Every structure is written in C-alpha cells, then in structure tokens.
Image 1 (cartoon, helix red, strand yellow):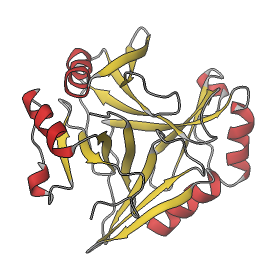
Image 2 (image 1 turned 30 degrees about the vertical axis):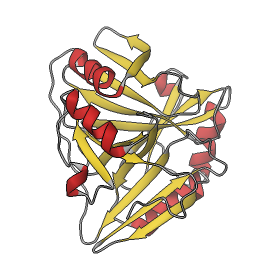
Image 3 (image 1 turned 90 degrees about the horizontal axis):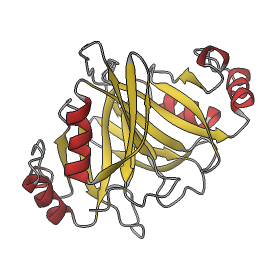
Length: 262
C-alpha cells in the first residue's frame, strides 16, 4: 500500500463561490472537474504541487446544504516560517473574515473559515508550497484505538505528539513520507465528550499500489468493508475509522488523462 494521503473531501453549498474563495485567497488552481448526475466534484491545489502533496476535493450536491459537525476539525495550510502574521493579514485584506488571529493562538498558528464554515488553520513550515495542505485534524473519542487503527490498517507511524492538561494531539503519516505530504492529526479531549459528524466533511483518500490487493489486505487487518470496490465498479473503496470517519482507497496513475476513475 502506498499510504500517501491523496486528498481530503468537503461538501459545499455553492460550488462557484467556494472555488472562487480558494482560488482568490489561497491561489489554488483547478486540477480537475467531474460533472455527475446531480453532483459536481472539483479538485483544487497549489500550482506545481509536490508529487506526494494532497489536493482539496470540493463536492457539491444539487439542492443540498451541508451541515458542519465537530467530529472533523480542520485542514491546515502552510505558510513560510516567520510569515504567519503577514499571511493572516493578507487574507483579511483580501476580504476573509477575522476568526482566530495569531495573537489569540499564542502566535503559533491562526484560523480562518471558508464560505461553508470549514476551518482552515495557518501553520508555519520550512517546506511545501505556500498554502499547500499540511494536515487534516480529526477528533476521536478513543486515542489508543484511533492510533492503532491507522497503524495496523494503513501502517502509519506516530510522527509527533503534543499533550496538554485537557487534550492531546497526535500526528500520523506513512513511513518515509515526504515532508510535503499531508498528515493526519488526531485530537483527543480528556473529558469524554462525543462528536457529531454532520455531512459537510466527507472523507480522506489514501493511495493504493493495487486497489484489489490493498483492499484485501485491509480486510485481513479487520478494517470495516464499508463500501467495497465491488460496489463501486472496482474503481475505489471505502472503509471507516472507529470514530466513523470515512477513508477512501484509490489508485492514482500520474500519467492518466483524468484524475477521476469514472
């Protein structure tokens, strides 16, 4: 299994407005688009993305307004070291609403929101393209079980942790992942709270070397067969984490004419 995180999917209520927001404020370009029966999918990302970089997938279902839950936290985008304040001010000057400025976050990070209320964290990094995806944060109710899931099913390793008096953050990624690759952040709150998923956050996608072989391996490792490849014309499959986050498994051919396996 490759294990590289390929994209993170979020649902949006106004596709044109969301595409414009990411193109205007994060300088994303459209990587691909698929028009389906009652829905549209658009892949976005910075120009000249690293081969292990992750894309943002926007999905719009006609006539639906997604509901944001709290089981998904945010996506984080990179800014150069020492430029957090100026990057945040650039977004505000461009018309993005003030949400959580660097000062309120101890000068270590900041947050804005996109038109549907998806939270976007700004983090300083000495690698990766400006605004490229750094990590996706998921909230979990059992940290040990969640870390074990990613380790046993996908062979992810614990790359970092940060523990406070009331919560802990755990960062996981495939062994040997490039610094430019996106990682998973698991957030565990010690107070035993539970979370609502809503439908505004969709899934994370993991790249497979061979879809059928890697799917069979997931089942051997007792991953839930949520939406098997056989139910999706053998183009992709979905499993779920113990907390109910959907994980897509798909092959990615860099020489293909289209990003979509349809």
